[in-house]
Amino acid sequence: MVTLEFHDPSGVIAVKQSHAPRIASLAGKRVGFVSNEQWQAYRMLPLLKQLLEADFPGIEVLPIDAFPQGNAVIGSEETAALVKQSGVDAVLIGNAA
Amino acid sequence: MTNAVAGLGLAPDAAMVTFPIAMFLPGSDISPVEARKQEFYDGLTRWRSAFAGNGASEPPMIRVQASSVEHAFARANDMMLARRFSDGLPLWPPTRERVDWILRGAAQPRRRELGAFPPRGGVTTVESCAIALAMAGGRPEYLPVLMAAVEAFLDEESGSEQLQAASGSAFPVVIVNGPLGAQIRLNAGFGCLGPDPQRPAGASIGRALRLLQQNLGGALPGVGTMANYGGMRYTNVVFAEDEANLPAGWPAHGVERHSFAPGQSSISLAFANGVTNIRRRGAKKETPEEDALQGMYRMADFMRVPNMPGLAGYEHGTPGILMLPGVVAKTMAGLGWTKASIREFLWEHSRIPAEHLRRAGCPAWIEIDASKVVRESIDLDPWPITASPDNFVIVVAGGGHPTNSYWLQGYSPGVVGRTIELPPAFDRLLADAERDLGPR
Image (cartoon, rainbow over all chains, first blue to last red; front, top):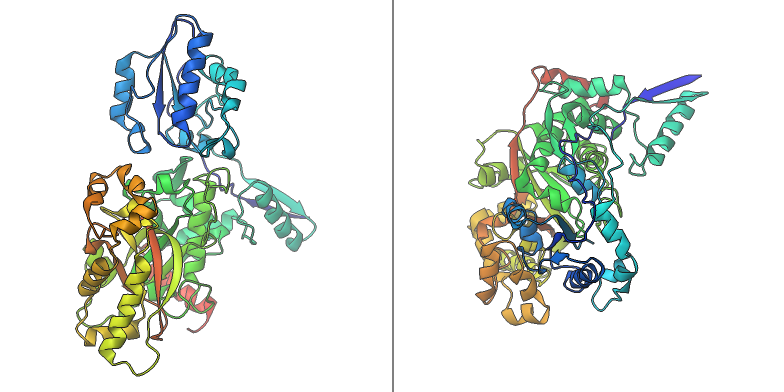
């Protein structure tokens, strides 16, 4: 019997931070959108805004363009800072394809 | 997307709602958004990561057993396919012995970290490069070139984080300058972008880089990379500039683009997403001057397409890499052409009339570009395909035949250079290669 032992080439992933904690409920919360304006985001995200506002009493959903939009800027530290400053409880990000 | 999340240092999953691509196209039916609205709500409220802990533990060695060496080799290859480590061609199982042998080419300790391979964020070490090179059938003397290429790839300036996942099928192009290319049998001449048993180094170096892209970077087709076609990805492109045939006064690419010292072994990495032959030589009774000029027009005309790949590197990268055979370079130099004057000619004659941009819908791409230089270029008519002539990469490489030139269409935010660091006993590795591979 021949045994062949070799390295796993997929290596190691270093997890350095946790995902943000989820909120208990969307009712009465402040929610924002970060949009790259691509892949029909200009249609889908406003639809989601309507749905959230209809389904959760007291929710405040910021306008889709409340934060900078576009692939070139949504990943920036500046955009992240603006999101934090806005005091939102949760953020939806779209659209990828 | 999970790759990108992992690449940020988060656990490799995320609260996502995914739909078939059809819903993301113009005029689509977006009613599934409402039908699945609860998934969005759950993502904000109930979702939990499936990964606990820091995820940084070393994966265990893989073991196969079989009745013979041949069967063990086959089982190992089957397993690497099943685990999505393979590129579909036979691989050399990266055993300890094989990887240790490759590491004789390392100038740095095996555990030294080079960075996180984007987008998945696999921790990239000297050892992980050696594992990939072993799998790709490489040799120790190739490792210094691979290490330099990986360092350049991981440089943010290269754009690899986006290009690894993007649909535009970018592949890295590694140009080697200095004496090392010839020493390790890296091709600069006939067939330098393809297989060559006489000069085999580029195939396994480029294949190893691809395996790293896939296995550490997570660029699995249709899952981690949306590259529609993925051309040139078996081996990427790794070749040497034919410095022996550079005309007098023409600087080597590494000297010209990266200001490396003449004679310094180095690599230069850019991304391309197209490869094509452009006929260069005339066919009848043209004079040498006409032959050169007509060939230049054919090249410039080919580049004058409203296809927009050059936007990625408009300001700091490259619209592409033009490969000229040494015999052509020498003829053109004899007529007074320099690398700089060729660039000026190509820049001027590849400009695209604004009307051609408009009818092809290009202004929208220019308007949404992240670069202010790109956005402001929209007023230029005819529109230059790159911000500066200096962005064109011109290298002397290819067989000693004057009929053809080659154009690697750039898709490259940057052109990143690195010098190559050799281990102390490198001459011994070259001697071993002479022994193993026979006379040149």
